[in-house]
Image 1 (cartoon, rainbow, N blue to C red):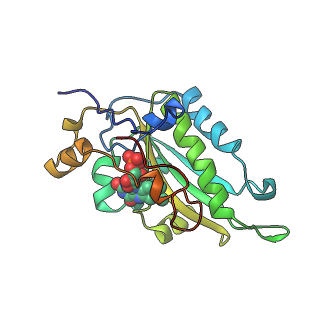
Image 2 (cartoon, rainbow, N blue to C red; image 1 turned 180 degrees about the vertical axis):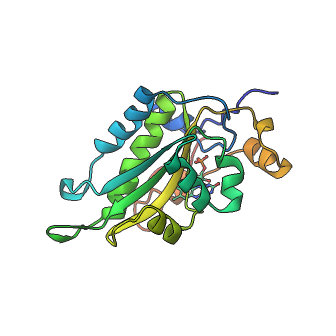
Length: 204
Ligand SMILES: Cc1cc2nc3c(=O)[nH]c(=O)nc-3n(C[C@H](O)[C@H](O)[C@H](O)COP(=O)(O)O)c2cc1C
C-alpha cells in the first residue's frame, strides 16, 4: 500500500493552509473511526457559518458507521458514489430549510453551502477528509427521513480518515485519486470589467 495522496492547491500567492490542503478524496480507511469530539467540531464549524440575516438554514443528518442513519444515507447514494463512500466513517446529509415563520428564507441554499464549506475545512484541520456528493436520490432521502416539504436535501458528505488509493477497488477510481486537481486561472475568474482580468496573469 502507498500513502494517502496529498494534492495541495497551486496558488500564485500563499493561501490559508487548510484551504490549500483540502481536496475531495475517495479513498477512506474502512476501519478508522471518527471520535465524537472531532465529529462535533465539524457540526460546530457549520453552526458558526454566516447566513443571510442569520437565518441559519443548514441542517445535517449525522450517520456514524453501522447506525441506521448511515445505512439510510448510503442507500440513497448513486452506485458510483456508494462504491467508495461506503468506507467513510461518517456519512452526513446536508439539508437546507427553505422556510421559517416569516416565509421563504432568502439565500437558504447559499447559506447552507457556506456552512458546509466550514464543515469541510474543519474536517481538514481535524486531520480528516470530506467529500461532498450531489449524486444521491433526494426524493428517497426525503421519504426515508420523513423530511418536511421545506427541508431540501442538498448534498451527502463522506467524512473519514483518508487512505491510500489502493483501498479503492476500481482502477479508474485509483486513477482519479491520483489525477492532478485543476482550476481556472485567476485571470478567468477575477474581473475588472466583465471578462477582463483584475490581476496580472498567474506566475508559472
Ligand atoms: C455540490 C457538489 C456536488 C458534488 N457531487 C459529487 C458527486 O456526486 N460525486 C463525486 O465523486 N464528487 C462530487 N463532488 C466533488 C467535486 O467533484 C469536487 O469538489 C471537484 O471536482 C473539485 O475537486 P476538489 O474538491 O478535490 O478540489 C461534488 C462537489 C460539490 C461541491
